[in-house]
Length: 563
Image (cartoon, rainbow, N blue to C red; front, side):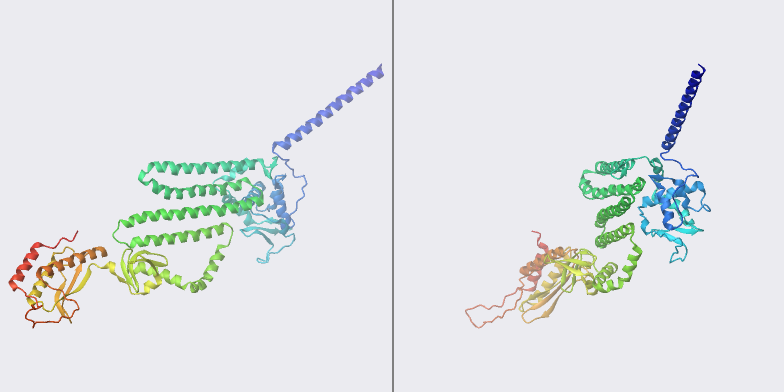
């Protein structure tokens, strides 16, 4: 009986111990699970052992990057790449994370196979134990302190500034919202990265639609109907690149936040940096057209035509300047050394100048045309064999519309060296002709005819009254020539021709009224000796009759030539 009780007591005691052991093991297991999932990864202690080394540049960089990866996220180990002498332990982890985010956000790929494994590596340029990681960040380098390689003090001081440049406008705060581990991958990307890409696509679509609505609806409704066509052809083409410009600027700011794989991120960021300046170029290129239209309308309201020829040339210069600056900006965003390109262009500038002498000559010729102002758009000029109206003064040549309605392009370098007869600057347009009278015209009739010509000049509304010359000027071989030298005050050649027509009609009418005969190259054989034939010499009336005929002609007024 006693033996049975003893065995029962022993069994009960053993079962209680076994139950306690199971409870203890279960509690310990759940504690481990809770701790492991509380922060997404196990926090190591100082006694934990990790396989890291700071013996060479390769090992230091490997330690930094390895222990900040999602599958091996231990920032306290990554923070050991900073010298404790100048980085406090509580700041070391933060700076290690920030430096990794800078490298990922900038798409800087560090090829581990090319890093030096030499313990006593010496930089050939500085002759110091330094190792530079990337040319884009000259202050990003390691230095040996004692027996270990650490990120330099200069690198540590620059990390906050680099981080602010890569993640501006407080976008670095978004990095704290994303998990560090425990996420699954789809197509090589974590779930939160895929969600972030979808969000960026949605934001881009919303911005594009918003600006489309803003410029195509609101602005068009505010403007008058008469301006709708102008806006649709000028303002809308300028507005569309703005939306794309903002979209790509936004993407270039937010894409680094996604922390995409380094190779993908590198080429994606380079693509964004190369694309968004293109839309800026298109925007400013089209904006020049809009501004030029505005200044062209202002130029049309002014009397001077200098601004009419200045606007097209300034438009071409601005467009060329925008394209050149845009290309240099794109090359700079693609990490090309544009200082070397500019230096190379300056060195090759002499050879280019020698090869493009005519182009440079024409360019400076155009400058001299604007400075000296020998002619303006719309002026009638004569230069060498070219005779016509100036239509445009360009960057290289001047376009002249001849009176045959053909177009002649004169290089500005040539026209700047030629003698230019600018008919467009004339205040008065000269009209000179010889009125040939027959030799049998009486002197008294010539005097009356000359007096009548002067009255015609005085009566015409578009002749210069203070200076004209009408005189019997020459006794030619077959005629008595009266010089008729007057000036018209008219702005165009067409009005000049019309005034000439009116004057000539008045002269012919006067001659017909007075009985004056105009001479022409002929030979007359006088046969005065035949009694049955009358002589060919005209019979003139007396002077009083001529004077009376002149007064009657003047009373009639100038004939109506407007028909």
